[in-house]
Amino acid sequence: MSIDLEFDRKHIWHPYTSLTNPLPTYPVKSACGVEITLETGEVLVDGMSSWWAAVHGYNHPKLNQALVEQSQQMSHVMFGGLTHKPAVDLSKKLVDLAPNGLEKVFLADSGSVSVEVAMKMAIQYWQSEHKQDKCRFLTVKNGYHGDTFAAMSVCDPVNGMHTLFNKTINQHLFANAPTPIFPKDKNELDEQLEKADLAQDHLIEITQLLKAHHNDIAAIIIEPVVQGAGGMRFYHPQYLKALRQLANQYNVLLIADEIATGFGRTGKMFACEWADITPDIMCVGKAITGGYMTLAATLTTSKVAEQICNGQAGVFMHGPTFMGNPLACAVANASLELLIENNWKEQVANVENWLNKYLQPIAEFAQVEDVRVLGAIGVVELKEPVPMEQIQAFFVEQGVWIRPFGKLVYLMPPFISEEKHIKKLAGAIEAWLKN
Ligand SMILES: *Cc1c(COP(=O)(O)O)cnc(C)c1O
Image (cartoon, helix red, strand yellow):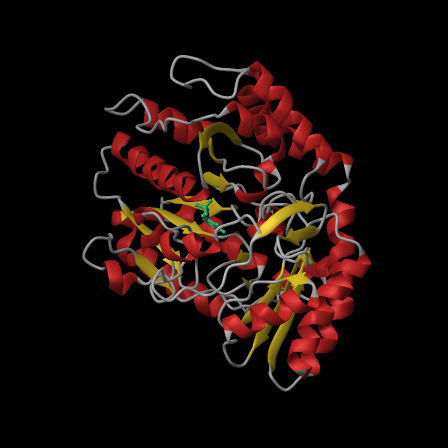
């Protein structure tokens, strides 16, 4: 094997991993379609889409072609004072796809940066109205918004390790997380909304926080409908709808973090559509390039953009070196075209059916607390945290790539997955439980 794993182990940080006592990492040789091939020869069916991103699978000819063609034009030029077709085409597509009214696009280099940008936008917006005090954020527990400082400050205070950085991060307001209940029958969403007092208890708390602190609050920030890395919880769209109304009523902005949920994952193009709302600011990332490279975007309304630019700065104060990177924009354009060509809605509906078919029976196991499925997301929540090293090795032996965290063993497979792939992924989880 040509790869120096010893060097990897001794010198390279992996996500949330110790360098003195690292868990094993598996060397990947190549990946194609839904399969990841290890240097050691094993072929794994991918259940993670490389963290929500690789929705069309790996090594896709059309995405490869977009990159090659763009690299022959230019791989990058600065975005200050210059522009280019890949960025314009992509921004147009984003405005077209996004909820109505989100028409101004900031291209950022990663999800966390797009969250920083969203939070800065909200602060600059209120500064332009001479409301300097409106600079705090209201959010809910169990959220995840990224690992940079501002993003981390609105992550769940416990999962997000706030105690480690307590003196450095800003102190924001946290309401209890919305009740983790998504209506069973999606065709009766509206009817259920009427009787959805499930959401009410938690809305009382958030309303009280707004009432007490709205003069200091710039925005509410939340992941629409699915709380991802903070617990894989699905909540009622009515809650989101109510937040939109409360934001209006108390004169604060609403930021929707669609970085995980965007581009079809929940069965809607954006999860905000479940509640039929338009946030004031929306972050997208992860699947935007089909998992090829890092890119994200922060969209906002004309009203927010105009007010920022009417303020004392006259401009929005952010501009990363690799803003609007043409390679990333080109592959994102190709990926968004593929979503449409592949009929993502049907793909996701199929994956959802198979996830239900093969995961729901697992709910019978004594170790299982809950099984839930929404769109192309399937979650098996266990009663106890899993032993990471053992379960990871077990899954690799079973020929699947599934990376649990804590009590959560979850699947978010590529949209191109076939029934046999979902069956294999679910079968590996079942085998672990029987083991
Ligand atoms: C992954 C994620 C982020 C952070 O994105 P990065 O590209 O990892 O910086 C932010 N918000 C949500 C909801 C995410 O899932």
